[in-house]
Amino acid sequence: MPANRPFDLAVVGAGVVGLACALAAAKRGKRVVVIDRDAQANGASVRNFGFITVTGQARGDMWVRAGRSADVWAEIAAEAGIPVLHRGLLLAARRPESVAVLEAFLRTEMGAECRLLDAEDVQRNHAEAATPELLAALWSPHELRVESREAIPRLAAWLEARHGVSFLRETAVLAVETSKLVTTRGEIEAEAIAVCPGDDLVSLFADRIAAHGVTRCKLQMLRLADPGFRLSAGVMSDLGLARYAGYAALPEAEALRGRLEIEQPEHLKNGVHLIAVQSGDGSLVVGDSHHYAATPDPFACEAVDGLILDEFETVFGRKAPRVLERWTGTYASAPDRTVVIDTPAPGVRLVMVTTGAGASTGFALGEEVAADLFGGARP
Ligand SMILES: Cc1cc2nc3c(=O)[nH]c(=O)nc-3n(C[C@H](O)[C@H](O)[C@H](O)COP(=O)(O)OP(=O)(O)OC[C@H]3O[C@@H](n4cnc5c(N)ncnc54)[C@H](O)[C@@H]3O)c2cc1C
Image (cartoon, rainbow, N blue to C red; front, side, top):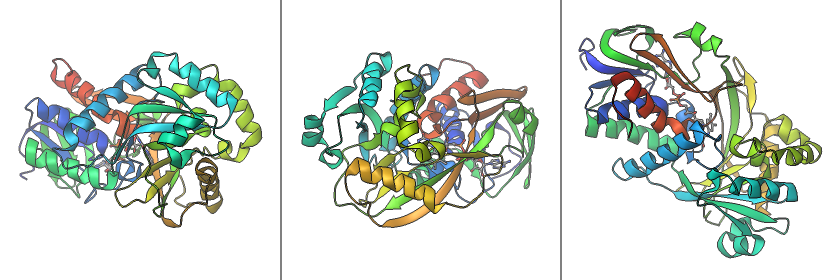
């Protein structure tokens, strides 16, 4: 790619947020280049569950963004060769306080198309999660699951082939100003620039990022061998109700939190809650935990994995299958905001998802950024 060709949009970062900005601009007929320092995607976007969630996202903008993003995933998946491995969410509740949260959730606008299942419904339709402790479960139809480590490279390849997006990899962006990027391979000109650095908080616009109070969150993840059953949906549990803002911000969640503090204090202390999703080969991706630091250590703690597996065994009522892989991932995190969209210079946007939801909300965010930079309506 000729590095000095002027583009309409240059995107820094080939994670899901950068690719989403590229897609939204390309759909407007813009000429786009995406620049990333790595040879292939290696950040949060390929380390996550690939669980595109709507239900449970923070009420308001995030929930709306998640709905729109799930629609975009569904629209492009087949064309981009990205299999949707399963759909929907089953949130299995084993405490009366959890059922109260689910009932309150269903009374909000966020409960649209969701249902409360009793233990018999779960036994009939989701037998894998039917245990004697289960009281009820929330069923949501809105979620999708993709295998991120395959989906993100395919999304990039499709953007290149179908939308003519250029990629410049193994190239670090050293500085950005209006209409110009300085990279390790020379300068690039672009009318507009979207900086989507994931959890790199220091290379570009460090002062702006610090002013938003952004730090980093480390998560532990596991891949378990095929358990011999097929998940009918992504599965979560009571712990998720105390963590995901769409439920946790409801007043009814307070009683649940109090009970969890007594019954599962170590899980809460380590930010452990359960998500279990399934891959094409039957293996399960299971997590996760949350530990915050400017530079989180890279070590996966066995005791924390133990807490995740303990919740898995309780929810599925069986011994966890063999662990096939363990990894950690990090994402940008802010205490009081879910996204940062900043304007550090005219024509330049800094775009970060500052909660663990970039796969679920990135496409909508990309559309917002493209509308902001180039004008016109969002889809
Ligand atoms: C373990 C884990 C599980 C998660 N599960 C989910 C989930 O199931 N659902 C969900 O919605 N979200 C989930 N998330 C959150 C989601 O993965 C992130 O919000 C999202 O991937 C962030 O995307 P991004 O493009 O901003 O960042 P990244 O994927 O980190 O990409 C940023 C890219 O920018 C590049 N870059 C940065 N600075 C420069 C520079 N100066 N020059 C060149 N390149 C640069 C990096 O190399 C990187 O490739 C999870 C996150 C983790 C870690």
